Length: 366
Ligand code: KG4
Ligand code: ZN
Image (cartoon, rainbow, N blue to C red; front, top):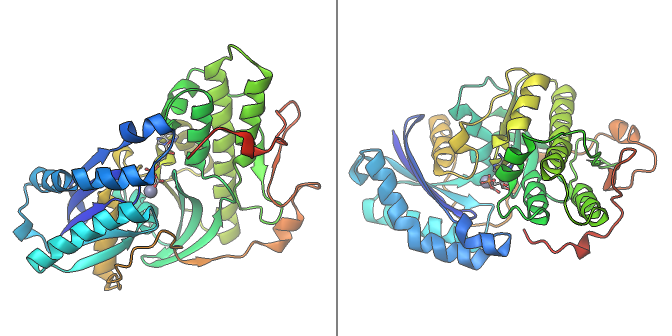
């Protein structure tokens, strides 16, 4: 079965061809240069650029796969969550192709694509825990089977990718900044600055990164002029990675699973890969080129759903679309939170920067 998939949920225009579970091609046109001057994705510009590039990207994916449209068996497309204008471009293109060819059309959840994308690197037995850490989302899912997901934890404020991007913006490293922080951090001392590790009193598995962002702002304000940028990047990155590794391992323990996968743009982070492998040997990550948004993961989710005969005929475009059921926080663990922690709070370790400043004064978009 050959699937042609389209992914346009945010700012990457992507198309891919899969033959069964094998990726024949994955072509992605990045919009980084369009959004970089604004320090974050501008929805209207994103939708317009998708319109300009979608045809070339589709043609590129078919050419690279040496596959004619007549050899395709189904068309898959991301229907949400994401930016509505962006999603509509992909869904309209998919509908047009399906109408013209008579091929079946498959609507796929963007986060199901991410959650299953580590399986593109290697098979994992069910159940496993999939941590999706991207620019738009940070959640942990218990994957019991294809189509059977439970969200066991998520962020209360910024996603991990947003934390990287906002940090990079404050440091003048441009957008998106996760990769730049990762590169600079490799030359820095991760113990140089004691940035806070955010905690959520009501839910110990939940993540919070807004206090970390404020702490970086305060640190930069308290050290005008030159800062040792590699040390700042290494310490800032370590604070994010610490939280992600702690939440992943705590969730594995709580749900009794010993297999874990990490996906989404932040899963490309070298320190996160290293720390997760140390904490959970055998942790699986997507191939490096399939961490950020891509159509191969959408095609893959479509293949796995179709193999199981699962429904995927809903093509309604939705900006918000939860994946699976939600687990309520564990009260016993909530009681174990440090005294004094507020509902969403960043507990600063001794010597760390204060996280008390209002985030409203930050000149960041994202
Ligand atoms: O999965 P993705 O393309 O977007 C969403 O679905 O939201 O992820 C993009 C995010 C950006 O925030 C980017 O800074 C981050 O992934 N990212 C990284 C790295 N490469 C990309 N963050 C940390 N380290 C990296 N090496
Ligand atoms: Zn994504």
